[in-house]
Structure formats: C-alpha cells, structure tokens
Amino acid sequence: MIQTRLGILGGGQLGAMLIQSGIGMGISISVLEADAHAPCALYATSFVHGDPMRYEDVIAFGQDVDVITIEKEAVNVAALKALRDQGKKVFPSPEIIGMVQDKYLQKTFLQQNGVPVVPGVLIAEKSELAAAVQSLPACLKLCRDGYDGRGVMMIRNQDDIRDAFDAPSVLEEFVSISEEISVIVARSEQGEVRFYDAVSMVFDKEKHILDYQLCPARISEQVSRKASDLAIAVAEALDLVGIVAVEMFVTEQGEVIVNELAPRPHNSGHHSIEACITSQYEQLLRAVLGLPLGDTDTQAASVMVNIIGKADIGSNLSQSVRSLYSLKDVHVHWYGKKERAGRKLGHVTIKNADITLALNTAASVRKTLND
Ligand code: ADP
View 1 (cartoon, helix red, strand yellow):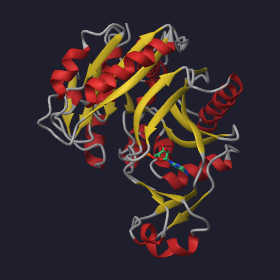
View 2 (tube, rainbow, N blue to C red; view 1 turned 90 degrees about the horizontal axis):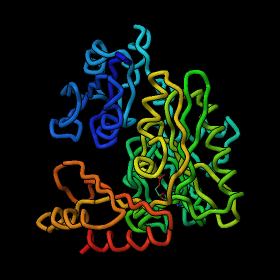
View 3 (spheres, rainbow, N blue to C red; view 1 turned 90 degrees about the vertical axis):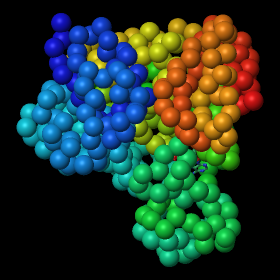
C-alpha cells in the first residue's frame, strides 16, 4: 500500500516501538545506530551500524530512504539539512532538532513565542555562576547532552556552586512544583493537529528520574485545558510535522510553565500503546508518511512504570519481570538491552477503567521490581 522507505536516527526502545507500530503499514524501516546491540537491531528491516552524530554516516544512511525521523535528539543537524536539500523528507525539521539540542536556545525560542517558561540565564562558564545566582535554591542545567536528570543539579549552597558543571549551562529559578505533566501533540504537513490527554509524571526527588506516570493526570480540568492549549501553541510555533512531548510544571499557584520539549516519541507516551486509540508511535508514522492523524482518545486509565537497571547487576530482575506476566491488566515491555545500573530496560503499563485499581497494581509492580 504505502511503499515508503522510512529511516530512523537512533535505534533504542523508542525506535523499536516505532517499528512495532509500523508493522502492517507495508513500509520498510531502516535504523542508524552506533550500538550493535541496541533494541532495534532485532526488528529493523535494515540495521545500519553508524553514528547518528557523524555527518558522513547520516548522509550515507539517508541515500537509501525517502523519509527520515528521529528517536533521539543527539543527531547531526547539518547532515539532515543536506539530505533535505537533496529532496528527502526530514521530520521533525533539522531546525527544530538543532534548537532543542540546546536548553538555552529552547528557552529563548519558547519565550519569543510567548510560551511561559522558568526564568533562566545562560552561564557560559563556571566562573560566571557565583555572580549570577540571585537566590537559593536554584537549578542548573547543562545546555547540551543532559537527559533523565543527568545534567541537572540543584544549587543549594556555596559548595554546590563550587562543584557545579563546568560547561555552558542554564541557571533557572527554583520552581515549587505541585505536579509535573506532559502533553503530546501531533501535527501533520497539512497542519492537522491532535493532542493526547495530559499525563502526570511522578519523579524520584533524589535521582530526578521518573518513578511512575499516570493518565489521566492529577490536575483539574482547567489546568488540563491550559496545558493542552500551551502544547498546541508550541506545536504550531514549531511548524511541526511529527509529534512533540511538551513537559510542563504546574506550580502551587496553578500556573502552567513549559519545562522542555522532545520532538519525538517520548517516555510519557508509552501508555498510549495500550490506553489510547492511536499510540504516539503510530501517530508519528501517520504524520511523517502524510496519512490522516489518528484518534487520540484515552480508552482507560493507566499507570506506567519504567523498569530500571539496579546497582546490583546480579539481582534477579529478569526473574521479577517474568513474574509480572502473571498479573491482570499488566502489559510488560522488555527492551532486550544489556542490564546496567540506572538504565531503562523496559516498562510496564497497567490499564484499568478505574485509576485507583491501576495504581494499586502499579504499587505491587514497583514492589516486585524493587525487591
Ligand atoms: P532532563 O532533561 O534531564 O529530563 P529536566 O529539565 O526535565 O531535565 O529536569 C529534571 C527534573 O528536575 C525535573 O523533572 C524536575 O523534577 C526538576 N527540575 C527541573 N527544573 C527545575 C526547576 N527550575 N525548579 C525545580 N525543579 C526543577
């Protein structure tokens, strides 16, 4: 039916779930990835060993595909621009990718488009930090290459200033967060827009890593409307083709502020595989292949728990994961990655019409995984 050759830069679990949703669309999916054992190696039509950050690798990869998308932001933007000049379709645009690669550029873009963000200043080098700190605590974020909380540190005192990152960073005011939420928006080349219900992301306060996530989010209808309006405004301002996860903070005063953008499939949309009519993965394929966008309605409440590698590698994590298959309402996704402390190895989605029951099951899933 559709004979497009799609290329994905990055071969992790997000790419693998994209491939999973592309089965049945009659497309071929090639993946460019540096790690020969990455999840997509098992499933891609063609798994090309190369570095998505390397100009030559991306150019060579692009010759055999018609449409290119990403599953991570760490890719070579100049090469994507050159491929677009050759007539390849590149979604999201290289300009969007280049902008989100840098937290300061991202903040500036959002501010210029009237989107509320956490006030912040650029710290070009560590020596500028002490003078720039207006009040404590504050939050310092590396401009580039931070993810899953690596690259974020709280500045509470002089010792933290001394031990701060020594690379270009953004110094942000500390926000009293009442809820962290995410809204995923899809937008097509024709400007058709669909958004998903907001999800709440519950973080481990120490590690700044997601503990679990639930949908519908723990917010009022009014806050939910504000959040989806903002997320749609972001997608329009980006002139996006594809999907974007808009991560937001809800403050104790009920304000909604954008924290960061991810113009690709996102952890906060894993639940959409089981809990929404169209998953974020299928939606991205629809958007980049020029198909009508799908219905984003939520069919049932859900809780999503990441499976994270433990410090004690000799633990019986895989045994615990096997035991989850016996639980009702539980959908296990195991990425087939090598176990390493702190690494996302899989996720579990618990789906139930009743969010309280889903949360109860999630509590036993988390206990099983943490024991
Ligand atoms: P990453 O790109 O690593 O996910 P984030 O910008 O999302 O980094 O920050 C990680 C976490 O740190 C957030 O989820 C939030 O809990 C906390 N955080 C980030 N910025 C602030 C801030 N300005 N004030 C208070 N907490 C923050």
